[in-house]
Image (cartoon, rainbow, N blue to C red; front, side, top):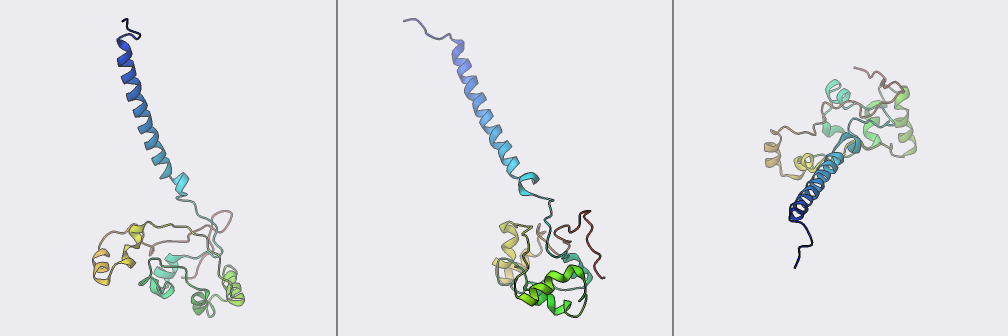
Length: 169
């Protein structure tokens, strides 16, 4: 019986299978990199928030502890957003006429929550601290966490030119 295909066809078939495999792998790697890219994750993009809140000002400048605003941080997996009452505790006495605090005063007067826009969707690694018992948390605090919020600044720009109103020292 005569051969239908030339002997080089076997090599060509092998090469095409290897090439197809390499293309599939390359496509998988490219899609994985795209999924993790700042374009998809919106890294560096800052949505406009209703209030120009600065963690850096309140923690480093004023000296507030995280637990003052985020009372559930030791018990829950998430720090959560504090109620308006927490803001009013101080801002009923200081900066009472500041224009950028008008949403806080409106929220307090109406009882409606301030509609913050989620900026960070932290990985589970950052939630370990609140999920583990106290003894384990002490050991975990020694690690370098990628989710530290103590040096975070305003989580969104609030003016057309990106300038945030100057906060009191």
